Length: 397
Image 1: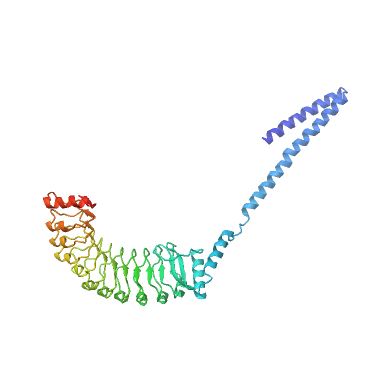
Image 2: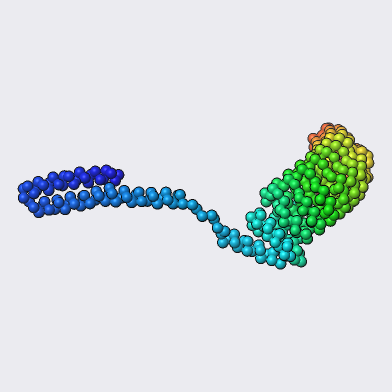
């Protein structure tokens, strides 16, 4: 556009010069002077457009490219980041010196501070203090690929969660945590259970679910204070005999493994209230189960069971029995002895009839009979089902 304007003004200047010369020849000097001034103005405009603007554009281009090539300085800490760090350090200033330094080191490793909490759960991202000591630490889902060494200096720690990270091993420094009572290591990439766990003799809760364990060490039986043990979603094909030493165990989850049987010593777990064996390869009902007389919940969902023994009647405190997704063709008469049952799931089996003794189960709140072959039920059982529904039981047929 500027080039066209330049050419136009140049043509106008030439025409003005020709006209000016004409009036000079005919001696009309006034008009000649005016035309001369117009020529000067036109020439000035041409000079400005062609040279001055061109120089300015080149100068702007130079400045732009110089700016692009200039190195951008590294981003400094924002005022907000500094405030977060300052607030976090203020929160932990009353901690024991070594523990405070260790926690500050961990905070730097994960990229910032984290909140205070009263208790550490499996999915906690927080810390807890008591009497000037760090007693709980949760580093849930922080993308950790290695164990923070500074944790080994937290000798007063009672609760620790490192769940949902990418840890493949546990260092020996963990053995320093002799006061630890709760440890969550669920959903990592651990392939073996380290022997150093046996030094944590105060452990009450140990969650090692969703890892890559193929075996459990015999030394696990030394954790005599264990109240809850979760080994679900691993690759276990057997459990060591020493598990029978854990006589204080109340909850045991062995679901989603590859177990074909249970060790006979598990019959020693007289305090066990909850046993989860879902999604294994059990083809026979384990003989040791009826000896766990304190059982309240038994989950045998998705195995390969074809029958249930009469000894199940010994579980007189049982409130929840899950036998769905098996190959059961009948139930034992002893099922009627489980009078405290509140939930009975028998769906997805091959049952063709129900024993008459089942009508003694009057406390049921959930009864699932779906996807069987129960084409004919006795009048007594039909009336029992109606009575259950009247009392608020959910019956699924």
